[in-house]
Image: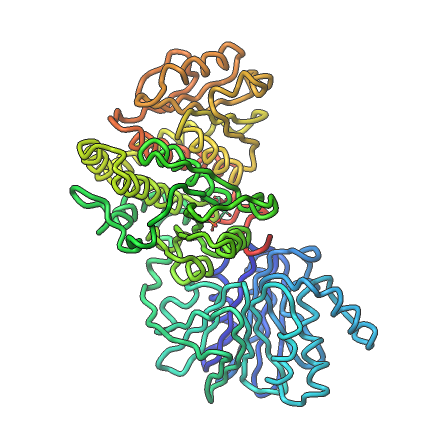
Length: 599
Ligand code: F6R
């Protein structure tokens, strides 16, 4: 989704802005632009496509000394990805960049057009800059005009504005879309949509509350209605870089065995599960769980629904956030409403959370980004601690979400006394093996690389599995289609004969998840049915299967979750290798955004 950066300081401003935007590339975009102000003059540049195009356009432009700049990567919502629609949008003497959606832009646009304003783009954003200049005519003071502009906007926004009427000043406002402001001891000021561009640049940051409006210049910072609270920013640039891997996705797959240890630390004890984030009073009266999320996070939720019912004997239901919002759901206050989100900014999930809060439910966020909108809204949060995930296709975030949810199912099981202590100890022991399992699973990487060349064509992939391996099949199919652009679907293995099997022929590839610890024989029968109809079978299993055309042998394990984590890695590596062979940019697949902040 769109990314915003801003900078005030003495370093070369164009470079600062473009490097900042580069850190946000992982969010997905289709055009980019910057506006730079020095000595009261503003220059703006825009380009469709990758940042390299913007760099090319600005190669003869350079700043020296103090100045201010704003930059933007756009992921098209209103209007095609063209240069005219790219940000910054300009008025007579001001420039604006914006993330989010201005819902009432049509009314504002019509009003301004009647007053003689000419619009250049099809975007909702352009109204902001013209409205600001209209307000300037009556208000005279830039901040008053900016505030009055923001007051008239409905929807979600993170906005930065430069105007020749206020040298070296950036005006900012935030509601519903993420924006962070950073500063350092050198007097430099930074803005960004997420931490990534600020790491190694700012020493402290403030996460703006919804409704914040203000301005900053070398003379100082002003924010309303509440002052900004700065906190130290930790982390270094290296951790945000690829570290020798070809893609962030690859690095993130390889990191899983380490970050999952962080997820568990202090929570998985020898004889117990501890969540300091959840106090006794918070959980009193909870009898059921509703899990709500989108995409990969939804698959994590679906996986855990089996665990909650099996271990904690709690009724669980799982909702896709975009469906939940409009189904007029029946909500009861004995339900714990759990939202799962890597980014913490997904618009549908955030809105679902608001609905649950309004209905008086207790809410819990399982999230990877501290201080994100979802974290700030939920009553309680369990952070997944996966570290920054840059690959658009989620990998380590999924692994850590599943781990937190498995832990949570045991936490509830213990509280509700639904599993014997002996079983609890076994679960904890198996859980402690997960980092090792994730590490060993990487051994199949070369095999996936070699196999990938046989799976570049065909008319589709079926990923199939039973029980918790059904959501894993959904996740495998999603991973593959996101980055390879091949058609893939996930199904419960037992569903094939109810329709999908009609597609089976030699050009249909079945990726069969065949764990030994859970319903092996049942799954095997389903795979045999597909094989009998000539589907090409790639079996992923610790047991050889004579009907498989291809085989990825996994390690034998004693617990289904250990098989789950190993097969998850196999799916990730296989999808990545297929996509690489097809020549795709797996970190920035077409049409996708990392943080989906629009509905
Ligand atoms: C898939 C993927 C998406 C996200 C979905 C929800 O690889 O990344 O399906 O899982 O957009 O995003 P979050 O988890 O940030 O709410």
